[in-house]
Length: 311
Image 1: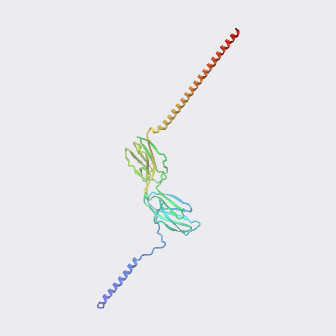
Image 2 (image 1 turned 90 degrees about the vertical axis):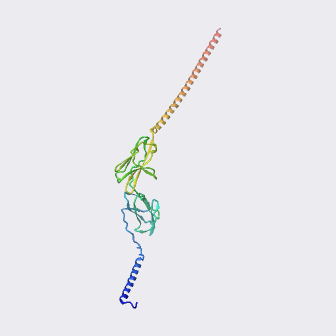
Image 3 (image 1 turned 120 degrees about the horizontal axis):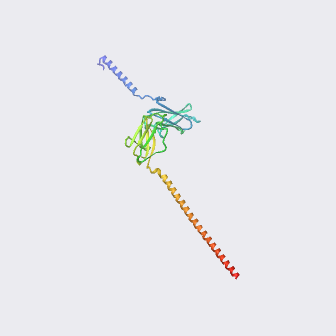
């Protein structure tokens, strides 16, 4: 170092200073920054639903057509205890949502709970609930627009005939994007594809019809017409019963048999009564004849005794 020129010494000192400064800047960059104590990120929601609660539960039906950022909010009015804070959580279809339990502070005599949900598809629909520690809850039922009229009686048709199953969405409800038909039960449904010789589907904006041709007993069951929206499908069940032409006659045949049996019983009773009356009349005639003979015999005996006295 002593034999080095002064210019080199100056350059070396500058390099050492720069290296120390860079190391200090790098160390400051890697140091963890403290978390804000009370910062709450702003919620950007396409739809907002609020439930105001006191001491009773609440239920709201929320109709959805498209995927949406949905803000659900619950405001619980404080009771006479006025606790400074209470615990609460969110649940979906009766199951607690992980990491949703938190402590809610009392502000302006209310406990306010809010959460943003992204409802992306049909699997996200269902029941969402905010539940407070005192048991008070608000339920938000997320679903596609329901059918106004649901048929409660089955459609009846006959073997080797055809049937038309109708389905309609009311004018007051949002117009579906398309229609689909299914067959099955609540847990398993099989979509029906159009087959000219068996299944024919005719759909318009607000209504759809399924025509089933050449019916058999196997075609009986529950059919579902589906009004399709971007977020999901609304199902409407229609029960189909397939019977033979003889089945409607069975009640009348039963009634006819009962009438024939009743007439036969009445006829037998009348016949028995007439025989009884005839035998009773014969007995009365025999008794009358016997009385007459006895009177005649008595008269003859009296006449003979009078002749004997005269002699």
